[in-house]
Length: 243
Image (cartoon, rainbow, N blue to C red; front, side, top):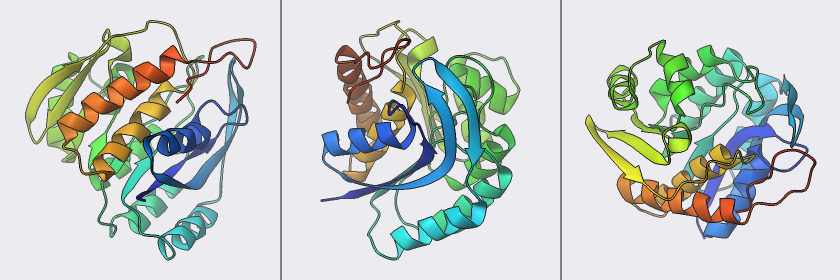
């Protein structure tokens, strides 16, 4: 069995962050190892706070996992400080495994949660980044169309880019080694908690299983769609994705 290392925040309501990552990995058939970057205060109604875990504690978590397990793919989610980003870059760069970055900058219910400067710093050390349109605009400080943003981010940071389609009618815009293309699928306009986490983790899993980026994007999009169709309502606000 292959192993994914997911690195993100802890959602006490179980809908996003490493909780969603673990459920996604198990559904696809990978063993999930997890490192917590932040303790969040949130539920299905929104995020109230994100408290960073000390950078050195994160370093020790990473080393404990890496020295014990063969890591086949990596997903990075919530980063709440530049210090954490520096630790991640230093510890993960030597690993020969696809690294997928999901920049969680804004909470779904509004307000900033992630550190955009931290994401800008670590972008040069990952293989693929999966921002939504708003996150891509924020990271590049540009208001171009999605295809142009993907190409610009690819040129600037050297990583492949998948601008996810939640704000694009279900159409993912991909820039792979300077080549842009789109991947479309059936789209649900309902706001579902945790979809970004599930998508990026599924993408990392499929890459870890040996798929090309284009095939991994298609499979991840279908996986999210099926997870959205099975969404649950454990709380009083937004439904939660159910991988």
